[in-house]
Length: 179
Image: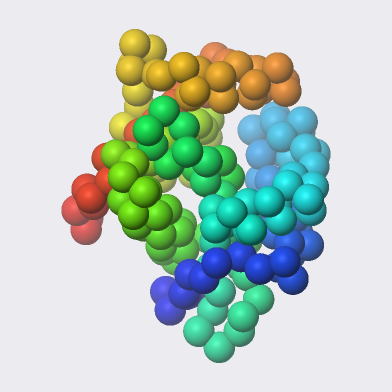
């Protein structure tokens, strides 16, 4: 689906966003991460808060307004932190993630933020390598600010193994080459 377009999330999209996250999460079972696969998406009220704050976007097709992917951001340590990005498995690999990240970067620039950050699994083939392809780099421990450290700690408290997680950053305005 290279002809996807990005638009702000709407209240009517929120149940669909939860479905997208559940479907995308199922793939983690292949890596023994059943807890991640079984984790419930954010409640409707949380998603509504992101949508109302202008910090949630969806990817839709050119002829269909039904979301096939979505992204949430939070301002953290002077950057736009990617709180969640999920794409339906059947639409992965078609550039939707790149479009969503570019939308988040535009949001960051408009607010004077200097980068995008995220946390992800280091050992999952479609996590760290994908984000590196999109221009992110793994942060050294001393580059992680207090807000991002709090995100990592909250993930650990939620049951994610810190040894499997990395924090990554992409400067806004930078785009990776087309390889």
